[in-house]
Picture 1 (tube, rainbow, N blue to C red):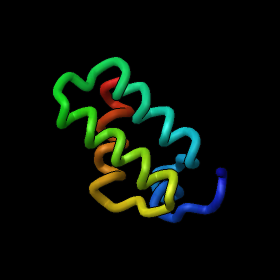
Picture 2: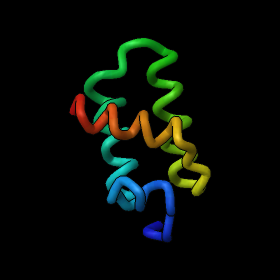
Picture 3: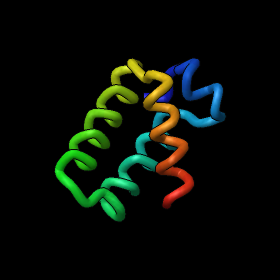
Length: 66
């Protein structure tokens, strides 16, 4: 972990920070199965270096909410 991810670098986050933000959302705010499933998929994409623009939007929204 801790590699260079250009999508995360655009929003000044590293991999661990992004995963922690989404985990906090998952633990505190995700209510439906779909919310939880999407958050887990997002964490998986962050970990696998497959972060998309939609993932970045989701991470930023999670950051605002938590």
